[in-house]
Image 1 (cartoon, rainbow, N blue to C red):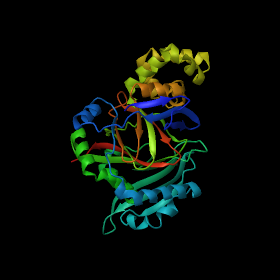
Image 2: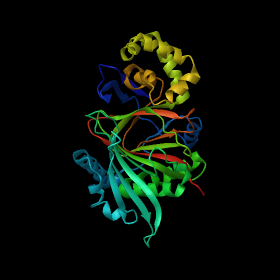
Image 3: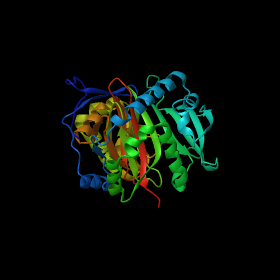
Length: 368
C-alpha cells in the first residue's frame, strides 16, 4: 500500500499517528488500494508477508450490532465492570447455552478489568465444555488511552495449551459469537471462507478470538501473535480507522539495521536513544542476527522498542519501504504467524477522533 507520510507540516487530509503519548507522524493513503488476486494473497501468506484486502467484508448488515458494541465499550469505560452488562439485555438471551457462572476483578493484572467464566451446556443441561472465559482489559497503562480488548479462551490464562483442545476452542469462539454477533461478518462470509480455504489449504477455524476497541492515543506496540497450532491472524476493521506497520521478523531485523546504519537517521536515533552507551550496545546487537532475533523475543527489548514504537522517522522509513497500511471499515489484514523466526510483527494505531471496533481472530485449518 502506498502511503504519504510526514513527520511534521502535514498535508491536507493527513491524519496524526499518536500512540501512548508519542507522536509518530502523519499519514494518508497515496492511492486507493486494489484487491489483490487470490494467487497473490496466497503467495504473500506462504512468503510470510502481510496482505491488505480492502473492502473484503460487508459491515452494513451488522450496523446495529456494531453500535451496540460501541455502547458496551462506553459502559465499561464508565463503570469498569462487565458482568452486570452481560447479565442483562440484549446479551442474556444469547447466552442460553453459555450461562455466565462467575466473574473476577483482575487485581493481579494492572491491565485487566474483569474476567467472566462460562460453561457450554447442551439441551439437557449437560456440560459440553467448561472453563470458558472472556476477559476485558485495557490495552495500555496510559491514562488517556481508552482502548479495550475482549479476549476469549479457556483454561488457565498464560498456561493454556489452546491447540490441544479443539472442542473448547470452538466453544470459546461460540461465546464470542454470542456476545459480539458482528463476528459473523468474518466467520460466516462466503467470500472470506472461500479465500481462507485456499490460503490455508483447508477449511478455516477461527480460534483465540479478540474483539478490539482501539481509541485515540491507543493501539498496540510492535509485537507478534505466534501460538502453537495456529497459522496466522485475520484482522477485520468493523468501524473507525487504523494505521498499521506489518512486516516479517527477518525483514524487520534488516530494516532496523539499515535505519541505524544510515547517517541521515542519526539525529532521529539519538532522539529516542540519547545515551551513547545504549546506541553502542544496539549497534553491536544489530551486527549479530541470532542475538538480535533472541533479543526481540525477550519481554524487555527496550533498545529496539525505542525505535519501533517511539521513533517517527522509523515509522516513515517503513512506510517508504511499503510496510504501512491504513484500514477503514470493511478492510481486512491477513498476517502469517508460522513460527517465531518468520512471523509478521505488527503495530496498530487508532486514526481519527473516535474509537473503532475490530476483530482479531487466530486462524488454523479445521480439525477433521
